[in-house]
Each structure stands twice: as structure tokens, then as C-alpha cells.
Length: 171
Image (cartoon, rainbow, N blue to C red; front, side, top):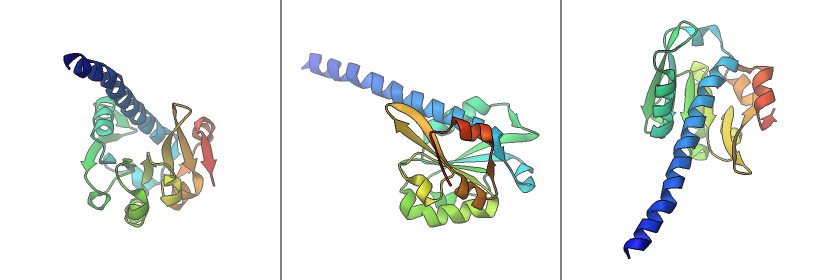
């Protein structure tokens, strides 16, 4: 019996490592996305706030990666939330796959549109529900897709360089 538990433990360690690595990559990508977005002037005032909804690992990695760094003249601040309804005044709203983006899309779009927020998600089909950037896994590789129309609706523009790096671009 001890051998079975030990074997199960050995098999789950790589899965935890993969999840941690995926969270790290999503955090690094999210921080890099902000450099390739055309932001309206009002978004460049005060702190640059990244709201993370229900993904502690991504929030922790963004905090680690952005510690002591600025976006232009703005300090980068990372706030965690349990629901979309709690999000306030953020330039980026990262929505976890544990949030049902379909049923929350109306509230999400309302929050984002009021503040010209970039919506970044990690759920299949999320660009159909307001997300401008969505992480997807294709053939075992983490990629992202863009939705230019959703970004434009929020007053944002993707750079051609960001478009060149994406797996898919929806208009």
C-alpha cells in the first residue's frame, strides 16, 4: 500500500509543476501584453492596476515579476478578487478559467468598458464573451488568441507585433 501512495505522489508532482509553470508563463505574458497595447490617456494615470479574478498562482507570479517595476511612470499594482463583481478600477482584468465567463460576461464587459480595461482570460471560447486576449493550449503548447473587436470596444489597440505572436486573431 505504501508503494501505491508513493507512486501516486511521484505521478502528481510533475502535474503540480506543470500547473505552476503554466501560471508563471501566463503571468509573464500578461505583463508583456501591456507593452503592446495602445492605451487611452486616462489609463496612464495613477497606478497601473492588474485585477486577477480567482487565480492566486497567476496573481503571485505577476506580483513577483513586477515587484519594483513600473509601466512607464506608473507603479504596477496587483489585486486579487473572488468574483468579477468585486473588481474596481483596473487597466487589466485577468479572469480565471474557474469563473464561468459566459454567465458573467455582462458584468465583466460593464466593468471593463467603464475603465478601458484589457480583459485577459483562460477559458475556451472566452473571446466570444468579451475577452480581448485568451490563453489556450494547442497541441500541448500554451498560446494566446486575440479579439481586435473586443479590444477596440474597450478603447484599446493591439500592436502589429502582438498580433504577429498570437495563435489566432478574431475581428
